[in-house]
Length: 266
Picture 1 (cartoon, helix red, strand yellow):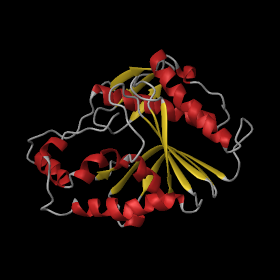
Picture 2: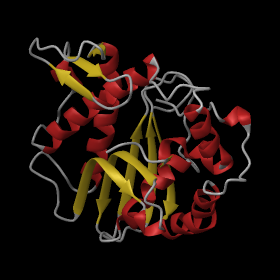
Picture 3: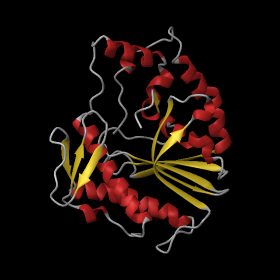
Picture 4: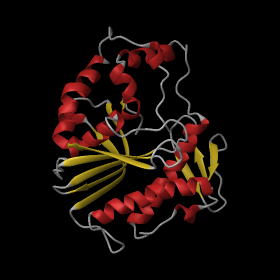
C-alpha cells in the first residue's frame, strides 16, 4: 500500500499548514523540488523497522524471549524511493540499487528495547510463552483505516497495536533516530494511529496508551507513553483532525513556507 495523501507521519505539518499539501504537489509537478527520496538516516530507520517486524513476528510465533541478536550480521536492503525493504541472512544479495544496512550491535540493542516493551505490555494482559489470551488482539504493521471519518486519503501504518477487549489499547511507534526527541503527548501521528478503525470499535477499549520507543536518542526516555480516553481522542478527531483534513482540499488554504520542509523523525 502506498503512502496516504494525508499521512499520519506528516500530520504535524499539514494540520498546522493545510496549504502545504497543495504547495508541495505543485512544486513537485513543476520540478521545483524532487519527489521525496529517503535520506540515509530515514533508510536506516526503515531497516531497523524491518528488523522490528521480523522479530515481533518471531515473538508471536512462539519465540517469546526473542532478541534481535538472532539476526546479527544479516543485511537489510532498503529502496531509496520508500517502496520497500527486505532482509537477507544466508549470503543472498538484494537489489544493487538499494541501500544496504547490516544488523549490528547498535541496531540490536535499540530493537531489543522495543521487543522488551511489547513483551511487557503483553504480559500485563496475561500473555506468556504459552500463548496470548483470546481477549487480546495484537497487530504488527497494521494500516490505520480512517475511512469512517470520510477520508480515504488519511492514515498510516502502525508499528504495533495491542488491544484488550473492554480494556486498554496500546499504540506503539518505534523511532530509530538519534536526534530530535519525540514526545507522545498530543502527538498527532500517534493520535491518528489510535483512531484507526474507529479506535478498534469491535474491542471497545476505554483508554488509548500512545507510546514512543526511541532508544537511541540520549535526550529522551527510551520508552515514553501518554494515556488518553478514547472518547477524548474521538472528540479531537471531530474538532481538529477532520477540519484540518478538509482544509487541505481548499485551494485557498494558507501555506507557511518554513513548514514545507519539516520532516518527521525516522
